[in-house]
Image 1 (cartoon, rainbow, N blue to C red):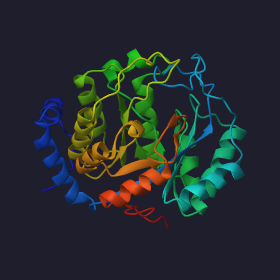
Image 2: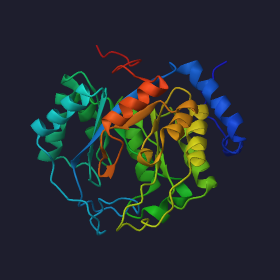
Image 3: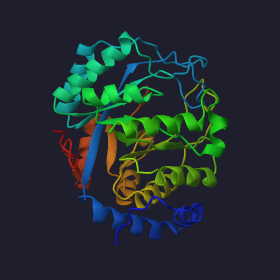
Image 4: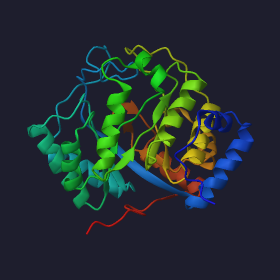
Length: 325
């Protein structure tokens, strides 16, 4: 019997999410084993190709121009610099290279042309390539697809009901429209959210319900724990617990069995035993490298030691993806 459904009800999602934690992990692990190789983890590297100066007001983000943080703004990097970082990431075991630009939306200009060249270059290295550039039109998505883009990240962040408490410079509908443009272009969708923003369980359930009832599940679902940054409105938020992360990972795994569920921001504060619990609950993707855009992340050597201890191994690039003619 297939577990792939896009007609989940809010009540069903809430029932799964609120299951006794050990029962929830057991069910999620069982689903995971049905659809994924045990121990296989997609290793991604994320590079900020344009940092700071963003006009948005996302309350968690140190790159918003209106907040006073320690982020050093820089203009869009040149292609050679980005490709050198991609080669280093590949040599350190990453199979997907993600590029993030602190833009509100993509503009059809010379900078977007440069990003297109970056995508072509990373693809030429034999790596999967992902971008997160803000809002995207259908034509822009088509250009990225033609250049060889594998995936596009555009997180929902939280529930539609709580969204305006965190961001007022765009709407939930804007987010969903971009995801639709990405899907229409034939690019893999990467979309998840952040916990620890001040939301409650209802908001977490709502976000997961939205993702799991899209016409097609995202191929990648990042689960981020807020990294509270001084100078942002959320600088005093408390760190979420491992149990909250496990509930999110396990519920996402059950609702979207084929997705790569990514243990994303917040790993630096999680000892290996906590990360191991998340892998058991269905996480099978991480970001490697010492920075996630502007926030700290475990060093490559730490992750290699964790992989060895837990018996994990990197997923091959382009595994399970159709080969374009």
